[in-house]
Length: 292
Length: 237
Image 1: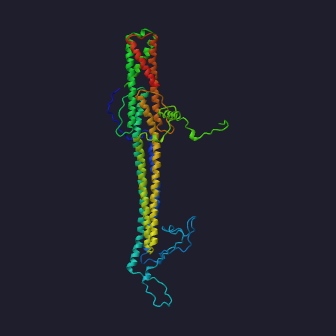
Image 2 (image 1 turned 30 degrees about the vertical axis):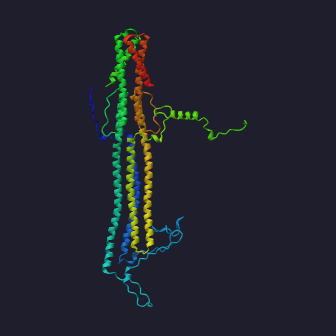
Image 3 (image 1 turned 135 degrees about the horizontal axis):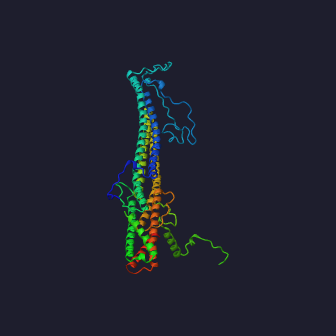
């Protein structure tokens, strides 16, 4: 048998990374699965809130244009004249609404503010000189060209702004998906590599144990750099050394006894002693062979 | 004292002879604390024993907990940012209506701010709870790997000291069963081989004794071999 160097190094290769599939995949997939669940649930929450924020931002952008002079009355938002929805059980009457309502309305009916969006062009209509005269039909005055232009510019920019807001929401979604995929793949690779550093020493110990089982007391080499279970491996090394020492003690004892038996001509005294001595010699041969 | 009167047990009377009772209780308690290699009773998991291999267990527990914290923190921050954006849009929309009602504005602002704060507290609470549960679960999970390794380490220590006693089963739920089975096979094989060798030595000693060999240098060697056989039998006990 060729002698091997004592500082023999065994390098890691990708194909050997999954040594102990059950252990490695269990720990790695737990880590990956947990991260995926967290990313999925919280990502869903992020997207729900982002969709709400985007809707608010879009509405805000639309109403910003309606506030500009030159907007048509048809676009104005009027308060809903319909009856308020029935309150939920336990909710005070007059309850739902914008943020800010409800908390202060405990005990007394809070006057609901009515917002009337009036035509800004009305400011330019001079007051009627005669109050008794029938009121003229309110015709919106034509806005100045600059104001009408700002309104048109705002309306023209609306699709772009809305698209920008929607694109921002989509970006959040794709960033989340991309980060999720990257984290999952990264964790998978890292998890397998990390668990390999535990499975590797176990595999090495398993190989030595198979040799011990076959009666071979081989030389035990060190672990690779970066391996874990260093303490455990030290325990194994001392156990291996202990077994080897016992084997060496047996060999030394048997050699001495058999040498003394040969010198004393023990085999000639009794066939039983001769048979026992032969058996002992076979044991000695086997033990000597086992000490590689 | 009437013989009819029933004598009831009372809690205050349970310690009648402190010296005898306490000595027995302490003795039994101490003898029941056995090694995990003991065969006489199943070795149960205890909270104090959950951290058997700190380097392996903590590494994984801390990694997974920290990773979950980072993911939850980053996405929680995103949620909070979006909520804050939504609140800002609400205020912006209110301001654009030019309603001259400072009280209402303040109320809306307080409502949105408290909503955002509550969201932070809820998320922080859920996050801390999740971390706690995860930490405990991971401790149990890694303990199921560290436990068998610890047990095998103890057997290795026994082997290093030249003892090859009995090897017992793992606890229910332990991992690394394949590895443990291989260890057990190896241990059984070594034990059987040592048993066979010791028996062969003992047969030789007995044959010599039966043949009346025992004088001179050979006698000394046989005495030493006899002592060697005894020590091996102790190692196998």
